[in-house]
Length: 84
Image (cartoon, rainbow, N blue to C red):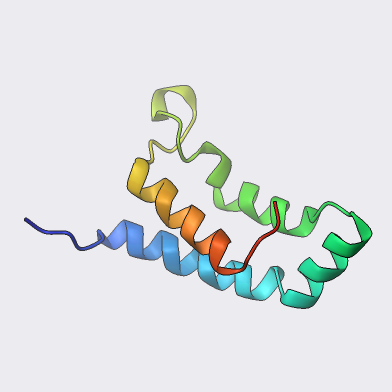
């Protein structure tokens, strides 16, 4: 049984990690958390990457992601200690 991530899953993880490292810097997150501001720059990137459509079937306009895809997203967001 193969437990390795698929090529698409590796790409998803790597792209999300790169985006979070570029946009969701510690200073950015800390400032927005302390001031109670919503991190629109990060949210806009999630939309741009299609993350909001990830868990929904393609026939409904989503990307048809599975539980592993969602776990990868959660893991990367948690890696940055995202406060939301």
